[in-house]
Length: 253
Image (cartoon, rainbow, N blue to C red; front, side, top):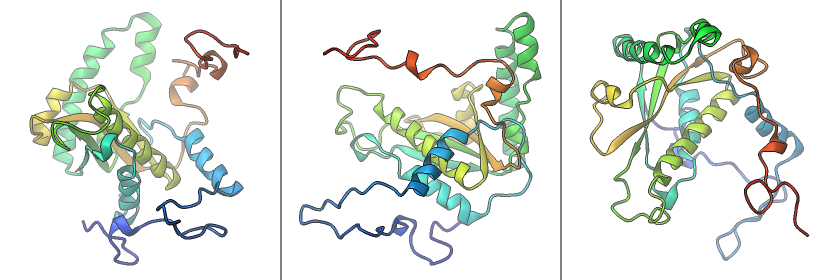
């Protein structure tokens, strides 16, 4: 796979948005005017956020074309990162034998997880179809290289796990870009990450952040699947926003 713009041959890093009307060239300081998006652009961004879903079983066998995959990966690579560390890598898993081996690891962990639930909760857990590893034409493992950038990284001196948070930002970017492309993503977290290490040949300084199932879908739940199936409910935003300190809901004059 060539990481270039398939339509122009330009390097992926050159795939940048052109200025919109009213946006001028960079100022002498190197900064450019920060114009808000148009109404249509804002609506598209919020729609991608609000309709993103964790896909578990609805994948189609149709492969994701290289040009679409490159756009999705470029979006992930544009994620913010502490000290511009960019600790992520993306391992593309297409070989059915490798996916089958990953599914075997998942099956073992899933049995352990199922044993933690009882009664109706256990029955509901068993009813969830978690077949994305085998059904999706592509699996992507997003990793974090904790040594990238050297022993001292700007912004990571006091919060060492910000490299992991950065890699998760890349996952979110990937997910939203995939949604805009009509591509479904499912995050498989029912793994012991250490079990994946030999399968993926990970060096000691690299850790698994997310194992993703990726492929086209023709249907999505109108709500998150776990909400649609009465596993959990979306919390009210009003209950999650505090003023100034934990638990305070009213602004202080």
